[in-house]
Length: 67
Picture 1: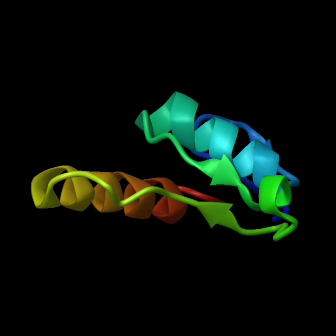
Picture 2: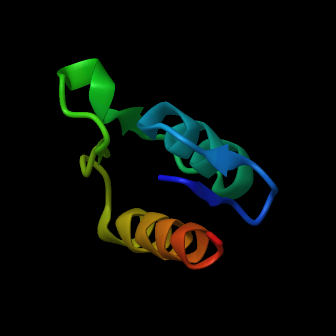
């Protein structure tokens, strides 16, 4: 929280994080606030291993780009 994404979006909440992740890396997730778990986020892993690896790579790239 309090960082800016590579795309220039201020990450002030978990909702900001998941929206920026979707827009910038095309990874869908759910803000933790939806489950009473702010400031975390949730992902589904009900898919094949290659898709999971690519999703994790994209999440890592997004996080690495935060400043």
